[in-house]
Image (cartoon, rainbow, N blue to C red; front, side, top):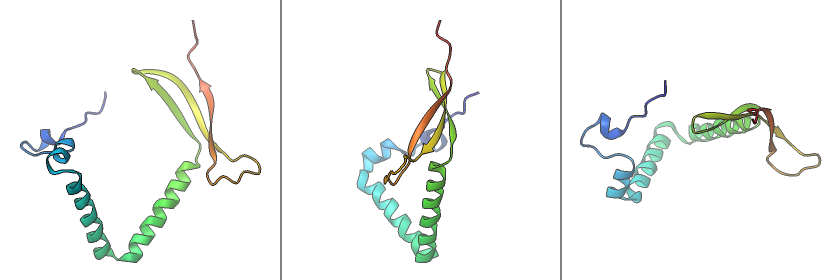
Length: 111
């Protein structure tokens, strides 16, 4: 069973959400909400908390980017292929980020 995505207008009749809100109020309004929200968080918890939050987020992104994982490729509801994504750093490479290597694990047989 597929998960059902709810629209804001279904849950709160008479309210605007998403693209309708951006169209009516403008992008500046949404940017202002994000800016004020960030200021309130910084005022409530302090600068040290915000720095620690950023450090943890960067470490988590670094960790997840370098973990091998299995990737399933779908098209129109059909499984096309299964790959294993492995991070690989070339020898004597000065690149900051390792390049992902995709190893084909399964592909449907061609008739």
